[in-house]
Length: 247
Image 1 (cartoon, rainbow, N blue to C red):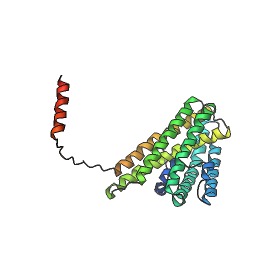
Image 2: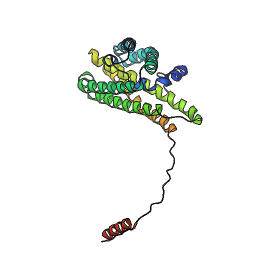
Image 3: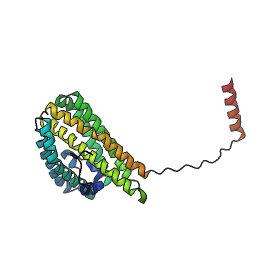
Image 4: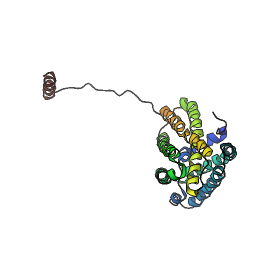
């Protein structure tokens, strides 16, 4: 695992309760639909994300961007943790599911409308694919929350969850950098765009680890199939079909 984006184990364990919020959270506009004082809390958290990504996208070279990312990424992870914990504590699950879906739709629409002018076709297409993959990952996470885990699978699940969270968080950081660049009109330098593409590709890994977590909870059993009994009319229909096929 790349040390540049590895998260401390304690943080990963805490983040496991905030799994869906890692890959999508509502924009400031969507946050207005949250209950009560939650709106202002989410706005404050989004403002911190804005500060972190702004500092990163201002870099001119890939090396400078990597250094800024390494310095700011732990703070970004902590902010995401706060958001996920808040969402799980106060936002009803049906509302969170709806806002998550709307957040993905909003991101995809923005990228389709403004991404080509902001980044060019290659980055835009990779970003759209990444958001689509994160959407699928979020759906897998929702399934995980509706299923149970056997005691003997907990150790494997902890490993899968750790790897999923690491890749999902890493990917989302780069998505947020692109969205901030696009919304602010601050163009990214070519070498930084290359780093963005590389970071976006982590979405596929996040999806794969989430699927493995879901597979641990799926314990299919062979269905019992009762023998089929034919009456005379059904048997005659079968015989007629066989004669037609022979002809």
